[in-house]
Length: 189
Image (cartoon, rainbow, N blue to C red; front, side):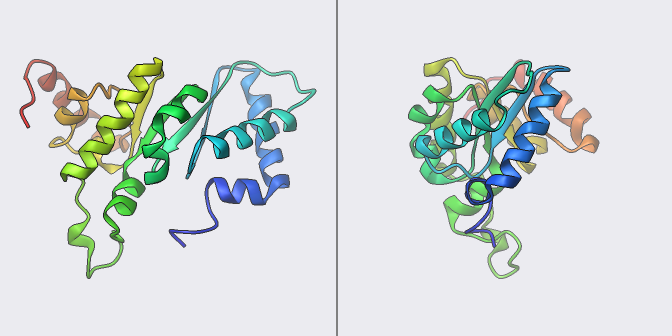
Protein backbone atom coordinates (compact mmCIF):
# COMPACT_ATOMS: atom_id res chain seq x y z
CA UNK A 1 0.00 0.00 0.00
CA UNK A 2 1.04 3.61 -0.53
CA UNK A 3 0.86 4.19 3.21
CA UNK A 4 2.24 1.57 5.50
CA UNK A 5 4.97 -1.02 5.52
CA UNK A 6 7.40 0.23 2.91
CA UNK A 7 10.55 2.30 2.58
CA UNK A 8 12.36 2.86 5.84
CA UNK A 9 9.75 1.00 7.86
CA UNK A 10 10.35 -2.07 5.73
CA UNK A 11 14.11 -1.73 6.17
CA UNK A 12 13.73 -1.45 9.94
CA UNK A 13 11.29 -4.37 10.03
CA UNK A 14 13.45 -6.65 7.86
CA UNK A 15 16.93 -6.39 9.42
CA UNK A 16 18.31 -9.39 7.49
CA UNK A 17 17.29 -7.88 4.17
CA UNK A 18 18.67 -4.48 5.16
CA UNK A 19 21.98 -5.97 6.35
CA UNK A 20 22.41 -7.91 3.11
CA UNK A 21 21.79 -4.75 1.08
CA UNK A 22 24.18 -2.74 3.27
CA UNK A 23 26.97 -5.29 2.83
CA UNK A 24 26.49 -5.34 -0.96
CA UNK A 25 26.58 -1.54 -1.08
CA UNK A 26 29.67 -1.46 1.12
CA UNK A 27 31.49 -3.89 -1.17
CA UNK A 28 30.53 -1.76 -4.18
CA UNK A 29 31.90 1.35 -2.46
CA UNK A 30 35.42 -0.12 -2.64
CA UNK A 31 35.20 0.51 -6.42
CA UNK A 32 33.93 4.10 -6.24
CA UNK A 33 31.90 6.53 -4.16
CA UNK A 34 28.37 5.46 -3.22
CA UNK A 35 25.34 7.40 -2.07
CA UNK A 36 22.72 5.59 -0.01
CA UNK A 37 19.31 7.28 -0.04
CA UNK A 38 16.91 6.18 2.67
CA UNK A 39 13.29 6.26 1.43
CA UNK A 40 10.15 7.27 3.28
CA UNK A 41 12.01 8.78 6.23
CA UNK A 42 9.74 10.39 8.82
CA UNK A 43 12.26 12.20 11.03
CA UNK A 44 15.94 12.42 11.95
CA UNK A 45 15.68 9.67 14.56
CA UNK A 46 14.52 7.18 11.95
CA UNK A 47 17.35 8.24 9.65
CA UNK A 48 19.95 7.96 12.42
CA UNK A 49 18.66 4.52 13.39
CA UNK A 50 18.95 3.28 9.80
CA UNK A 51 22.41 4.78 9.30
CA UNK A 52 23.58 3.19 12.56
CA UNK A 53 22.21 -0.22 11.51
CA UNK A 54 23.86 0.18 8.11
CA UNK A 55 27.24 0.88 9.72
CA UNK A 56 26.84 -2.03 12.15
CA UNK A 57 25.99 -4.33 9.23
CA UNK A 58 29.19 -3.50 7.36
CA UNK A 59 31.56 -3.89 10.28
CA UNK A 60 34.69 -5.65 9.09
CA UNK A 61 34.13 -4.97 5.37
CA UNK A 62 36.67 -2.88 3.50
CA UNK A 63 34.77 0.15 2.25
CA UNK A 64 35.27 3.27 0.21
CA UNK A 65 33.37 6.53 0.44
CA UNK A 66 29.72 6.08 1.43
CA UNK A 67 27.40 9.06 1.88
CA UNK A 68 24.05 8.67 3.62
CA UNK A 69 21.07 10.79 2.57
CA UNK A 70 17.34 11.15 2.88
CA UNK A 71 14.51 11.12 0.37
CA UNK A 72 12.12 13.93 1.31
CA UNK A 73 8.73 12.54 0.34
CA UNK A 74 6.86 12.33 3.63
CA UNK A 75 5.52 15.72 4.81
CA UNK A 76 6.70 15.04 8.38
CA UNK A 77 10.30 14.76 7.15
CA UNK A 78 9.93 17.95 5.13
CA UNK A 79 8.83 19.84 8.23
CA UNK A 80 11.90 18.48 10.06
CA UNK A 81 14.27 19.19 7.15
CA UNK A 82 16.70 21.22 9.26
CA UNK A 83 17.30 18.49 11.81
CA UNK A 84 17.49 15.81 9.15
CA UNK A 85 19.91 17.70 6.91
CA UNK A 86 22.08 18.57 9.88
CA UNK A 87 22.65 14.81 10.30
CA UNK A 88 22.53 13.58 6.68
CA UNK A 89 25.18 13.99 3.98
CA UNK A 90 22.64 14.98 1.31
CA UNK A 91 18.95 15.08 0.49
CA UNK A 92 16.69 14.36 -2.43
CA UNK A 93 13.10 15.51 -2.88
CA UNK A 94 10.83 12.71 -4.04
CA UNK A 95 8.16 14.74 -5.80
CA UNK A 96 5.86 11.92 -6.91
CA UNK A 97 5.08 10.74 -3.40
CA UNK A 98 5.44 14.17 -1.79
CA UNK A 99 2.72 15.67 -4.00
CA UNK A 100 0.51 12.66 -3.36
CA UNK A 101 0.89 12.80 0.43
CA UNK A 102 0.86 16.57 0.73
CA UNK A 103 -2.35 16.93 -1.27
CA UNK A 104 -3.97 13.68 -0.06
CA UNK A 105 -4.55 12.53 -3.62
CA UNK A 106 -3.90 9.12 -5.15
CA UNK A 107 -2.41 9.80 -8.57
CA UNK A 108 -3.57 6.37 -9.76
CA UNK A 109 -7.22 6.93 -8.81
CA UNK A 110 -9.12 8.29 -11.81
CA UNK A 111 -11.68 9.98 -9.56
CA UNK A 112 -9.09 12.31 -8.00
CA UNK A 113 -6.05 12.12 -10.29
CA UNK A 114 -6.84 15.55 -11.75
CA UNK A 115 -6.04 17.04 -8.32
CA UNK A 116 -2.52 15.59 -8.52
CA UNK A 117 -0.76 18.81 -9.50
CA UNK A 118 2.51 20.02 -7.97
CA UNK A 119 1.94 23.64 -8.99
CA UNK A 120 0.22 24.63 -5.75
CA UNK A 121 1.42 27.15 -3.16
CA UNK A 122 1.69 24.56 -0.37
CA UNK A 123 3.99 22.38 -2.47
CA UNK A 124 6.32 25.27 -3.32
CA UNK A 125 6.43 26.36 0.34
CA UNK A 126 7.57 22.85 1.27
CA UNK A 127 10.21 22.91 -1.49
CA UNK A 128 11.50 26.28 -0.25
CA UNK A 129 11.65 24.99 3.31
CA UNK A 130 13.78 22.01 2.26
CA UNK A 131 16.07 24.06 0.00
CA UNK A 132 16.58 26.64 2.76
CA UNK A 133 17.59 23.85 5.15
CA UNK A 134 19.99 22.38 2.59
CA UNK A 135 21.60 25.79 2.10
CA UNK A 136 21.78 26.37 5.85
CA UNK A 137 23.84 23.20 6.35
CA UNK A 138 25.65 23.26 2.99
CA UNK A 139 24.20 19.91 1.94
CA UNK A 140 23.63 18.85 -1.68
CA UNK A 141 19.98 18.58 -2.65
CA UNK A 142 18.53 16.91 -5.73
CA UNK A 143 15.07 16.21 -7.05
CA UNK A 144 13.64 12.87 -8.06
CA UNK A 145 10.30 12.42 -9.75
CA UNK A 146 8.38 13.13 -12.88
CA UNK A 147 8.32 16.90 -12.45
CA UNK A 148 12.10 17.07 -12.96
CA UNK A 149 11.48 16.37 -16.64
CA UNK A 150 8.60 18.80 -17.05
CA UNK A 151 9.77 22.09 -18.61
CA UNK A 152 7.10 24.19 -16.89
CA UNK A 153 8.59 23.36 -13.47
CA UNK A 154 12.34 23.44 -14.12
CA UNK A 155 12.68 27.25 -14.00
CA UNK A 156 10.90 27.35 -10.63
CA UNK A 157 13.08 24.55 -9.30
CA UNK A 158 16.23 26.28 -10.50
CA UNK A 159 15.08 29.54 -8.89
CA UNK A 160 15.06 27.58 -5.62
CA UNK A 161 18.66 26.41 -6.18
CA UNK A 162 17.82 22.86 -7.22
CA UNK A 163 20.46 22.02 -9.80
CA UNK A 164 20.25 18.25 -9.99
CA UNK A 165 17.14 16.45 -11.20
CA UNK A 166 16.53 12.91 -12.31
CA UNK A 167 14.59 12.49 -15.52
CA UNK A 168 13.71 9.62 -17.78
CA UNK A 169 16.28 9.17 -20.59
CA UNK A 170 13.91 10.43 -23.26
CA UNK A 171 13.54 13.78 -21.43
CA UNK A 172 17.22 14.55 -20.82
CA UNK A 173 17.61 16.73 -23.91
CA UNK A 174 14.48 18.74 -23.17
CA UNK A 175 15.55 19.22 -19.54
CA UNK A 176 18.98 20.48 -20.62
CA UNK A 177 17.53 22.95 -23.12
CA UNK A 178 15.01 24.20 -20.55
CA UNK A 179 17.73 24.58 -17.91
CA UNK A 180 19.98 26.57 -20.27
CA UNK A 181 17.12 28.88 -21.19
CA UNK A 182 16.17 29.30 -17.53
CA UNK A 183 19.66 30.42 -16.57
CA UNK A 184 19.24 33.53 -18.69
CA UNK A 185 15.66 34.32 -17.61
CA UNK A 186 14.42 35.51 -14.24
CA UNK A 187 11.58 33.37 -12.98
CA UNK A 188 8.52 35.34 -11.91
CA UNK A 189 5.94 33.86 -9.59
